[in-house]
Image (cartoon, rainbow, N blue to C red):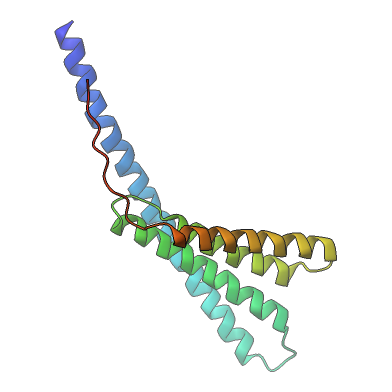
Length: 146
């Protein structure tokens, strides 16, 4: 029975570390893919600027916002590692606001959908404002085992 308990305790110590390592490796792979897509967007910008034909400003702005989405996701992954494996909620709000603005620029055919998307942006901004009212650092709570 004692051997089973030792093996179980060993598993409980190893499993979270193995899962954290798996998560870290996949996030690094995701960041690499996003960086490649970020460079691809820069090349698209260059082609759009060098093209002597008609310029689609709506598409250009949509690509700029897509560029910022890639940038924000990469920044969030970097912050995850700097913050000792924690995703700050602020980055999710930035990404949500940027994504909704891009959606309004790309798909603005329906006035009702545009209004709903604008309300979503307003809710995200209010959430960001409320988040900034709270202190960023939380005191550590000490849990006592009985």
